[in-house]
Amino acid sequence: MQDFLLDYYLWIKGLHIIAVMSFMAGMLYLPRLFIYHCAAPIGSEMSETFKIMERRLMKIIINPAFIAALFFGGLMFWANPSLFSQGWMHGKLFALILMGGVHGMYSRWRKNFANDSNQKSTKFFRVWNEVPTVLMIVIVLLAVVKPF
Image (cartoon, rainbow, N blue to C red; front, side, top):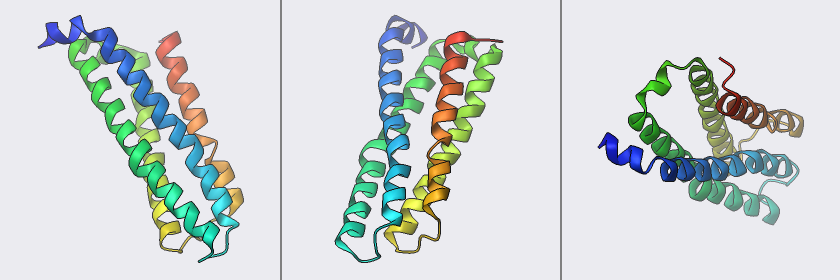
């Protein structure tokens, strides 16, 4: 199996990158929707539209892309287990765990909006809008530069 994965490693890597890009697009857009949603009166047509947009973004783009990124990343590890011994990969995996935590919080906040129980402010979501960007920068620099 490992030989098969190595033969198709670049395809797997390409699919991993596509999945990560799709995931990040959603992670960067969802908190922006939260910011706009905060300004919409509960029960208004605008609020209900944001609920649909947030649910679809999470269920149709973010969640499947996250699963695909993990799947193809896992296949790359299976093909090349020596990646685990590299220090930069430990940092990347730590940042990935943090990103997974942010994904979980976004999911919880989306459900709060869906239930009309959001208690957070636009300022709160403006700060959290930047967290995936910072983590993405760390992950990309670790993967490309491999500083340790």
